[in-house]
Image 1 (spheres, rainbow, N blue to C red):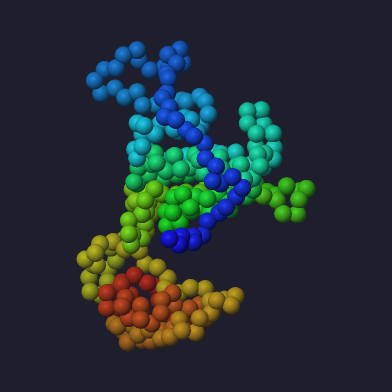
Image 2: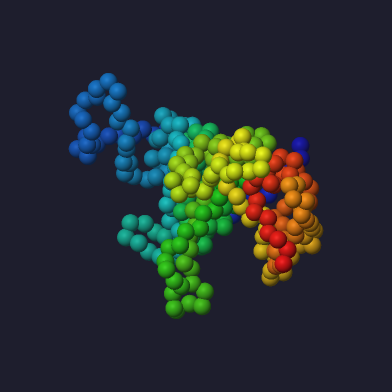
Length: 279
């Protein structure tokens, strides 16, 4: 039987896997800070686990498989530095094996709408991205969030690193779905009063829009700097005045002619955009 080839990241020792027996967590009563006894409704679900993180993850698997909504990990960046509590300079292939073993268990722990967030820097970020694609599936990649870790570049290098990464992965995406289950379950921030104030009920020719308050936006986009698009420059007839208007000098329409016609039928064109006159 021929094996169908697949795109994957390979490294020395990839096929070698540690033999992990089932583990149990043992509580140290001297370090516990919950009540001595449980009352009805009490939850003692916060744990601080001391020990090897691979063994700790394996111990959690028995009771928490497919139950974890969010996992955040801050692995060694493998920069070659030496720290008091861990080695941040293991051989590259060994680092990949260590990450693979832990990521596979984390995936088992995540619920179907769960997500994993990983902080990393440029040293291993791109290898880690490919490794996570293999474990979680490329379709379950949500985002690479770039965060600024320092105000400016160091003056001892011509190109200084001032940003790090947060790789975000989901556990599952339904077939043909535009978003993963994790993204669909994310808690959105409540809208602010300032944001709500942008939406108003305008006095239009045909009366208020039955769809409620809306925000008028400029229908043109900057076309300078080589971004001019000829097909996005055409006349639009105002249905109330009969006047034909064109985008201002240095701009295009944001939409092509077919989309503008659709918006006109939907009453979105005359209700929402602020159309600029040709100059």
